[in-house]
Length: 456
Image (tube, rainbow, N blue to C red; front, side):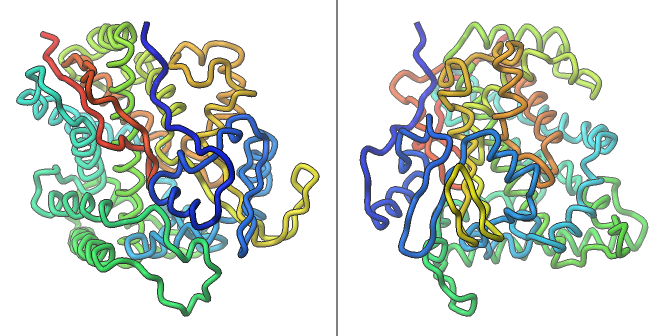
């Protein structure tokens, strides 16, 4: 009988702040105590601030849906990400964030996703063709493959460029280099440093971020010139760059657009690659489910030739992808802070306190989910699954700050998973189990290794 999907060990006992920081830099998840899988709220104290992890659905709703302006994004979030993301929608608050969302959101509405679908399909077909040379039954590091196809989707849908394009390929390569240099936490996230104090980012982190932004600036400036000349393709970049704020009439300038493209790449590429890799690993662990996915894929999209309307018929694939997002949410924790004093579960919480919402712990909470650590895509048709889907499932956040690309990501994941499993069989490599760790996203500590063979 197949065991449970891999889960990182929880830390044992209390630790000092400095020990916690060392553990945190190695892996966010194993730095946390096991009690978080049952607690409704937990307090973490440092000499400089208080942090409260909230799992109770009522508290999650309070922060994300009911009063989001009283719980803005924590400034600590931006400390390690500023070199790459600048002032993007991922780290801003208040009126700046509202203006950015008013310009960005229309590009990801339902009709726009239909327009982007052919580009997603091309990226998926390229991935199927690329894997042909790897499908010989030898171990393959699958995260590298899902990272490649996720980057291809971003460039195809955003800039109408395949990953083989010279600039696209360079951005992809630099982004992977940047990830290797970027620690999960900057020291300024823990210490109350004034804004004028320089942040201690490594030379490599700053250099790779600068190269990425230079390449994105080139793409953005080139697209602006095409828009002015009337020759720009009707893709997501054109839609966003020609969109105006309905309140002010403003558009993004080049620097603002570079900030947004950087977060589209980080959020759309990194998170999709993580979710797709874990989906394939879970299907390798549970061959019966893999065969269900393959049968549905071959019935609905034979030969990998899909249309947008087919996505509604891929119900098994959708639930498998949804369950993978539950077990391995790409962004394991979200950090907010209190704008004013609060009373949370009979505790007085001071202004400026950190409020952590953890999809990782919420999705595996022992008081909410039936068999929380088990892989069970059928759970979403049960009463418990339906309730938890509404109240305890936030892989894309929730409320006004829900990810703009949530619908995009669900279509992308369902499409790519069905295409890959329809074409190939994925099997575990017995001596290379996947060990989940969380840095910017949840990935395999030593990669995710699978054997790939053709289905026909």
